[in-house]
Image 1 (cartoon, rainbow, N blue to C red):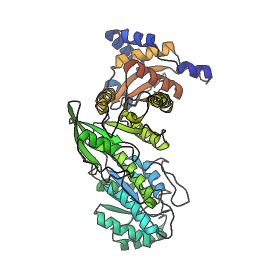
Image 2 (image 1 turned 90 degrees about the horizontal axis):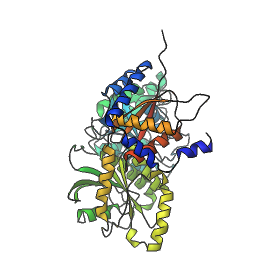
Image 3 (image 1 turned 90 degrees about the vertical axis):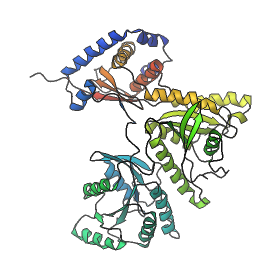
Length: 506
């Protein structure tokens, strides 16, 4: 791709383009879309395509389920094959796998699906080899994960047998009273089956023999997992459809989440301390803001001693994930007195990956001097250049300064998150966009957009039928123009392609 082509897709907002799309008559737009839909009949379409085109698969709210997916925590000592098993369950390479025990991972939870049942897998990786305190460290990490799980998959290396560390984890699991499935890993033959049978001695029931590396026995293990897990997570709590809009108040430790929630609630409901991570449990609060009720969830970490800091980070990451599961909009609190950190960026990315509406709130803004605010605005524009679509509010968690401005920002983000664009209007938009900025030739051919539709909302997900692959830069350009034309302020947008070929003539 030439630089000139890429830059043409990065043009400034085009008011004339927006006016052309807006001025198209609704009846004309629908007629155009119907003509394009009819033209698709000459292309190879599958059943899913036909359902989408007929409207059967369109406009389904992405948040229309009854509650958060159940959570399965995978625990076990280092090097027993937990991450390999996670990858096998997911059907793709997601968790980091190395021969070195205790490889650190940034991400700890992954969405999974088996026989139509969705669930969340938590990989309790990141343990460090510590000969002096291995058993206690493993038990500590496992306990954090188990606390937020509906069921536990305990992985043991059948070729080694039960160790003292394994027995320490078993004692902890018994105290939690959570359902436990015992997986005997690295079983590749009859001899391995005999080694696995010895694990009955752990007192956790039948050891399920598997080979995470080769896939042996994993399907049977997943059948047991699905039988054990509830349909909806009992940990995150039921989602109250039609009730107050659900807000996840998230951010890195000690950024002021609990102070902000206390100010909004009007009471010292949440423990506040200068020590990062003093909130032990998520706190759901009904908050009256802007003349109506909102359901806020505070997601701070957990108090840990200095040498257990990694456990607190692990816990906070899981809490954030749990809150996002049941939230509709996330308010990400950032510290205006500090530069945007890698952790801040990861939290923002987590919200986008979760498909939740997003509002960015800069805390401690009232403490900034006027001159500093001017330069800070420029820094924010630079740091958040990929998220200029997210509403931003400057607040003070300590005093409640400008807290009321969160309401219009959340309303705007949620309205965009819920938004649905008629098929005729979307195809009129695509027609004008392609006419003004056609996709460049690739290998002598130019991929064409045949038809487009919005498949779902919450967040908005669009599907375009094409004759070839659209460059990532061009897809980003489409999304930018979508925001410019239809708003979508405060919500991630997903755009997927369905590349289809013409039917062969018989």
